[in-house]
Image (cartoon, rainbow, N blue to C red; front, side, top):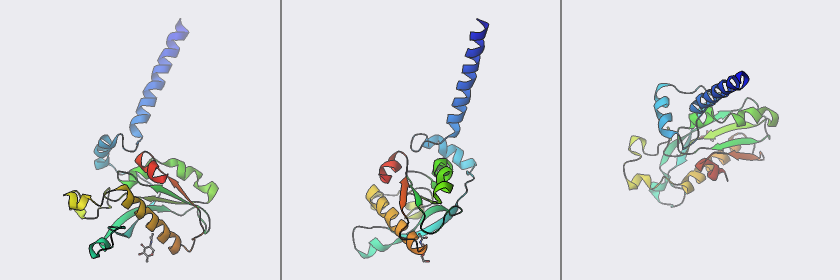
Length: 186
Ligand SMILES: *[C@@H]1O[C@H](CO)[C@@H](O)[C@H](O)[C@H]1NC(C)=O
């Protein structure tokens, strides 16, 4: 009898710890609103450097206004990498890329084994990657450029540019993502 009440207290404690754990973990897309609240107070500390890539607004219609440039944020960590080794790319989904990087430890864990370069690319219209600055969400005129086709083209262009700049065109690229970002990876 005593033993069983002891073990149920133990189980309860475990459950409480598990809950506390869940609250500090970010699941892309699901806890976005609670995350935003936390996001205003603290920024996660992450082992990545932020860079900004000049990206074109529209990859599919070849008009003068298509070539407007915005700055797409990406995070990079090259401490394990050597030329020719794989590039691990996280295809960002709907949110600030720092948060996805802070909660995707798996890529960082396996990077040393593969000598991988780690890259997290922010999705257009999220975080700092705003094609029209603070007016990005103003109307259909601006929001028309927020879609998965454009975002996938952003990733393709950025990855090719990165490989070119690193003179490592032959590097295999392995993509990672969760939720909508996982569909993008696929
Ligand atoms: C590659 O280099 C060009 C020229 O310096 C730069 O504009 C571009 O942002 C770089 N690409 C990436 C992915 O950083």
